[in-house]
Image (cartoon, rainbow, N blue to C red; front, side, top):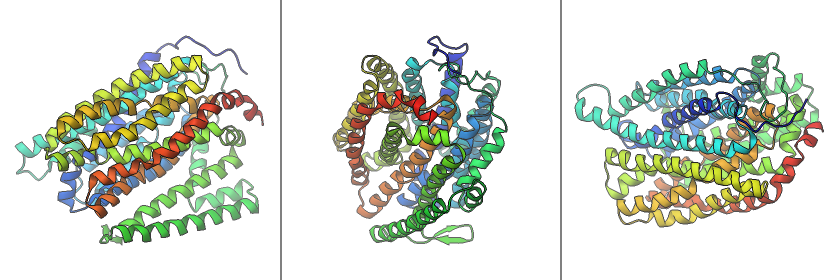
Amino acid sequence: MTTEPRRALAPGAWYALILVALTNAMSLLDRQILAILAPAIKKDLAIGDAEMGLLYGTVFALFYALFSLPVGRLADGWVRTRLLAISLLFWSAATGLAGLASSFAMLALSRLGVGIGEAATAPAGTSLLYDFWPKHRRGFVMSVIASAIALGLGGSLILGGVAAHWWDANHAAGGLKGWQFAFLVASAPGFVLAAFLWMLKEPARGQMDGIETAPEARPFAKSLGLLGSVTPGFHWIGMKGRGASPTMVRGNLLALALIAAVALGLTFISNAISPKPPMQLGSVTLNPHALQWSVIGLGVFVIVNLMQGMKLGDAQAFRVISRSPTVMMCIAVGTLQSVINYGMMAFNPSFLIRTYGLTMQETALQFGLLSAAMGIIGPLAWGPLSDWLNQRFPGAGRAWVALFAMAVSPVMSFWVYYAADPGSFYARFLIYSFILTGWMPPLYAIMYDQVLPRMRGLTSSLYLLVMTILGMGIGPYVVGLLSDATGSLRTAMLSINAVAIPIAVLMLFIARRAQRDEGALLERAEG
């Protein structure tokens, strides 16, 4: 049943936006704090940039991406406010675990837990807010979320650097290191915020879009079923139970063989570029490059399983998502942009410390405040602008804003990262970061308007899976790999901007297709 979409805000919309925004800020704070603490961790654990890239991106990425699927499915059928609260409690506890870490393996276990917990943030948060805010205001909503993400990113640098410095300066004789103390401090606010999320009232699903959505039966069973359908090994049982054809099974096995061959090839190439000594994870000895590409390969196989499982178990969602070129291109663009963003963000503090001789505390305060300020101001300007342009140029208006941000910022990065001194770097970074922040609000608004309300959690999960595995999982590791191989962190960071070329091409296609594909939404849903 459909009715006219609502244009007025639902009761509690602003309060819900604040809580979800703070949840996103906490997510980025606990995720990104590793970047400012990297020099101290590397020294204490005796590891290199490639290992830090693996820890920052790959270990986190696999579990974040994998668990975003079942929690995204759960967000489409269960109480999203409680799902967010429980997830926040879990990842806050995992962040605190890093404060007790004394080895790479234990720190990796902490990152694994943070990845699992944070997986619900985007699917549940986005789905929740879209039932409070009308369609024509969602660019603004996503701009607030983008600003909160920037607040968390900048806050992670400030809190991590200042807390670690303070502890080392005042309690150096104790057994706890400054970077461990910083993790403990970062974990604390999440426990308080979780209580407020638990008490937030759940809105009626689909109310703002005029698409009545009935409560789902057995959401947990369906969520676990989705996890089983994508988890390698278990997924074959699920395929058989859902009546997969022999052709589909053969296709799945062929994809696995191809992915394994590519992962093996990339391991050999990585070893040739930058040989690494074996890594000890508990009692297991592993080659870091083999671990990296095995995890990425596993993630890609999960993506294959998800699409096949969706085709078997939710044919309508498969049609709506896979038959929209705009959705597919938005996922590709967001993934490629994440290669750049996470590759740069993982090493920005290390770049400033190495290049300009800044201390951890100076970098934390100066760069952290600048990043937070511009990350808040930028999206709040770009989001409403994209809404305004989209009213006048439906579909294309938002795409033009995203295209401008993603095409201009990589070119500017060369001007920024060749600055002669910290002051010049910060002045240039201010302009660069303002432009860069314009990509996310319009791109996300375009993508989520292409699917039915009941599919937004699943769409978010699919996007997160692809973006996290191929964006976060590859960007930081490739930058670290090139840095170790060339001895130049600057060269490694700037090289990653090459992926801006396909981004610009795809955004031009999105600008031409977005309105047409959105108009065909109900047609795709009906088959």
